[in-house]
Length: 180
Image (cartoon, rainbow, N blue to C red; front, top):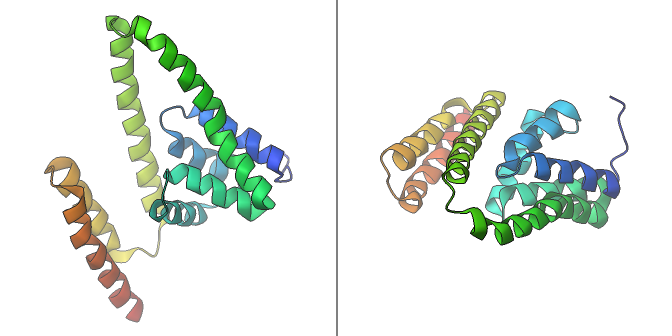
């Protein structure tokens, strides 16, 4: 596939496609498009942008789109990527929301929605595994990710206390690992 210049219009089209294909779970598609298909980022760069997006207010993937768009085409690129990501799917959600009240009680619709939930969860788990495997310099820090998953997902502990313990622990592991 020929490398297209990364213009605001290209960013809009690319992120609109991601938003439409990844309806309900854009992160796996964003990684696939930006890393595998377009080659605009490698796994480490994608993980860096995503982790930066996670500490900023707002949805992680929208933050990633804005940062990526800004990096390649300035303010227009940030706007193109973010509006592409949320605009077309937003209009579809609006239309579906208006029509949902008429079909909400149909068992087939309820079953389809439950099935889509499972698929979205699976895609997110696979993406998390791919990102974790791409991080060669993590060392023992990955243990804090596993501990967070066990504590929150399996043991059902509250997220904030788990993060309050694991974030400093992870930073200490990184600090002492870097000194070796």
